[in-house]
Length: 307
Image (cartoon, rainbow, N blue to C red; front, side, top):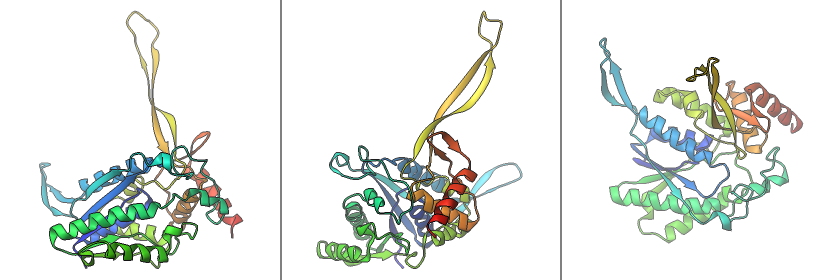
């Protein structure tokens, strides 16, 4: 196996699990994310938060009786991470997923209206940049480098650039168009699995890497319709100068929440239901934050209608 891996990190559940797999399998990992004007740009915040958390867990440490912490080694090599801005592209794209596009449809992925969530040539754009980075890592180190792909059996035919014939043609163009392209390979650990299998692997990887499952997956976003709501984070009575009656001071904060009705969210929640674990991300609808039970009940109903 190659020593180096390059991961396209969307900030979603699958690519985040793939990142964990690469931390286990490779000596060095480079992760890149793309800002192309997506409505669900919270995924970029989650990707950065996840990398920060993982890099903070990369070292092994021991604490003695006096409280002194000593670094004793590495759990894994820290991630080299970049966010790549594709400025000016959003106004030229026709898709419900980008800012200014139509409303993101709700329901199950089997429905035809989910074609509205296709972003023209998105995977080709991402693949070209990822290939360039991987080839650069390979030639600068003189060592083979793998592009890690989270492709799996549950990828939807509704996205043409998720199909094998597209990937084969894209790889052929990469090899025709570059010197030393034979130094770049692929790592595809989930070809035979689905989204549940990937999440199950994530659970096992968290244990192997000595990291917290909820800390990892609370730092992911799968929702194509994330929303912000204000919540009260502090409430206290304060005494103001010259006023005998204490005043109530409240501090409010805007936070991101995942929806639970879009197709991407339905499939995410389905995977957590199969795993038998509560999803650590917070959910909401147009009325405000909702409990896990509300999100779970809705998805169970949707799945029953599509049996």
